[in-house]
Amino acid sequence: MEIFLVDSKKRRKEFVDLPKILYRDDPVWVCPLDQDIHAVFDPEQNVYFKHGIAVRWILKDSEGLLAGRIAAFIDHNTAGLQDQPTGGIGFFECINNQSAANFLFDKAREWLKEKGMEAMDGPINFGETDSYWGLLIDGFSHPSYEIAYNPPYYRDLFESYGFQTYYKQEGFHLDISKEFPSRFMKIAEWVAKKPEYSFRHFLWSEQEKFVNDFAEVFNQAWASFKENFEPLKPEYINKTLKKAKAIIDEEFIWMAYRNDQPIAIYLMYPDVNQVLKHLNGKLHLLNKLRFLYLMKKKIITRTRGVLMGVIPKYQGLGIESAIIWNLVQVFKKKPHYHEIEFSWVGDFNPKMRKIFISVGSVSAKHYITFRYLFDREAPFKRYPIPDEK
Image 1: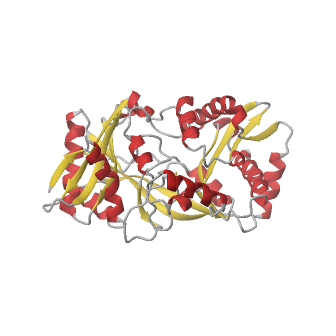
Image 2 (image 1 turned 90 degrees about the vertical axis):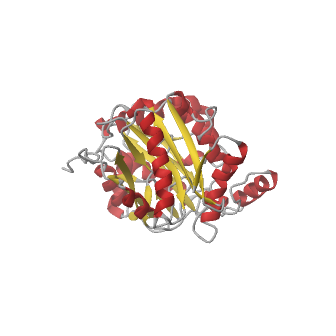
Image 3 (image 1 turned 60 degrees about the vertical axis):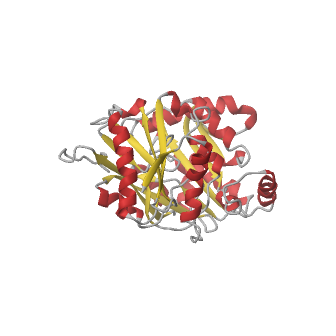
C-alpha cells in the first residue's frame, strides 16, 4: 500500500471520489457535494485556516486502487488547552482492512507529532462541531446534511488501533406529524406569551442584527458547559448563512429576547440531503436545475435541527419550550414536513438531552468521538461529564 499527499487537482478528485466507490452499494448513504468537501480544505473558504493548519492523504492498494483517505488538522486556538497538545483527524474513509486503516492513522499521527501534538481526536471536523463530527455506531438510517455517516466496521478499525472513547453523542428524532404532549404545549404557550419575552424568526433584511445577537447567545451558552470552548465569530455565521442561502427558510431560525436582550437561539434547516441524494456530489448546470426542480416539488420532508442554546441566566425557565411552540405554529403552515432530526447532543450536556426528551423526541442515533494518546503509557481521561442534579 502507498499513501499520497493530496496536493494536486488529480489527488483532490480522488479524495472526493473515494466514498463514491466505498458506498456505491449502500442505499442509505448520501454523497455530499464535492464543493463542500473541497471548501473545508480551502484557506479562502474555511476561516479555521486563520488559526490552524490541515493536510490530507489518500491510500492506494498494491494494484493502484483507492483504498482509503484521511485528513489531519490542528486548531491552534484549542490544541494547547487540552491536558496535552491535541490535534484532530477526520474525513476518514477506508476499506474493511485494519492494515489499511493503520497506514492512515499512522500517517496522521506522525504528522501531528511532528507539529508538536501529543494526541489526536477523531473523527472530527476542521470547523464547527455541528458538521462531520463523531463516528456513527448505532442507528444507520438516513443521514442528515453534514451529519456523520459511516459503515459499522469503522468502530473496530478505530478501537483496534487504540482509540478510546472521549465522549459519546446522541442524535434525536422528533415525529412532528404526531401531537405534542398537551402538558408541554400548555407550559410552552404560557412562556411564549409572557409580556417580557419576544420570539422572532430570522429575516434576511435584518441579517446583521441577527448574526450579532446569535453570536452573543451562542458564546454565553456554550461557554457555560463546554470545556476549552472556542467563541463563535459573526464572520463564521455570515459564511454559514451565505453557504446555506439556497435552502434557508426564515421561519426555521429563531431568536428569543427578554426586554429586547437576546437570550436564546434555535437554528434549523430543511434536510437538503433528500435532494442531494439525486445529485452524486456534483452541482453542474444540469444538477443545479434538478436541485431547483426538486426543491420546488417539496420532496424535503425532514428538517435538521442544528443547534439550540439559552444563556445560563435563563436556563430552566421554559425558553426552549416556547421556541418549539413557535415552531409548531410554523409547521402547521408547512404540512409536508414530518420529522426533525436534531444535531447530536454530547453526554456532557444532560440538560439539552432532557429538553429533547421532554418534547417527545426519541434517541435514534449514537456516535463516539475518540481520542488517541501518542504516549501509550499516559493515563487516559474522558471528557468531563457534569453532575445531573
